[in-house]
Amino acid sequence: MNGLYILFFFCLTLLLNGCKDNPTGISTTNPNSIKKVFSSNEDFSEYFYNGNLLIKKETTARGEVVTSITFSYDNNGKLIKKDEFSTAAGIPLSYYLIYEYSSNNLLLKTNAFPKIGENYEFRGYTQYEYESNKLVKYSFYNQNDELRNYHILKYDGDNIIEDAQYDESNNLKYLETFEYDNKLNPLIKDLSFISAFTQSKNNIIKWTNTYYTVSPPNVYVSTCNYTYNNFDYPVECITVYNRNEFGSISQDTSISYFEYY
Image 1: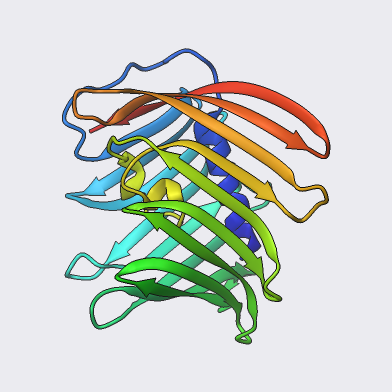
Image 2: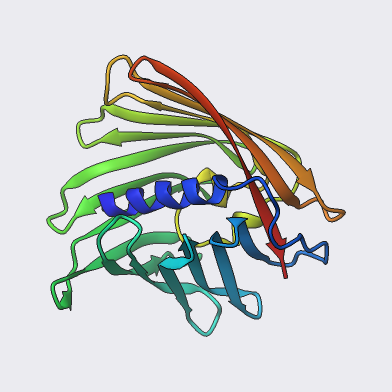
């Protein structure tokens, strides 16, 4: 399951880093669905739909597709399977997830089948727990039902304000905290991973990552200044990154853009 985290942080870096010119222009049509998040013509994530259902997401880096994810649904439009192929971590990675739901359609479990050699093999699962229909905990287990790690989520309204990851011994590994604007988050249609960026109603304007795997902890603070269209969706994000990593302090800035159907 660690490969999933690698892919998440790679994609997040890809979306928020790149050149400072808008290479394609920005659509101001009614943004029913996010089409593309990009930093250049060579670095972007693109979304494809069948009606209102997201059926594919591709991430391109340096002009080459590095991740391709497809989504499958039942006759009621409920997500039942996700297939992913990626070279983003430096080596080919292929796997699929099978989704299981409760009687009231809450996601209860995903079963992971990575490709090992020529075959797909069951290697673990994720279980989900809720309070008032909000996801508050999800836990990763291996194929032997052994807990590997888990996340605890806290909310303010419809926004995740805290995401804490613990290991199997209940040690806090990292903590993410989030602050928001009051505009609409287009990435809420993204089904590729669970995070505050894709689960929250509004857009994140500040997030702080604290990693407790080293002492003193590494701390990363990022702030985003958005420009919005007339539908209250973001079209541009100027992000400033401040890092305190192994006692070394650094800062840099990037710009990302949002395009809609």
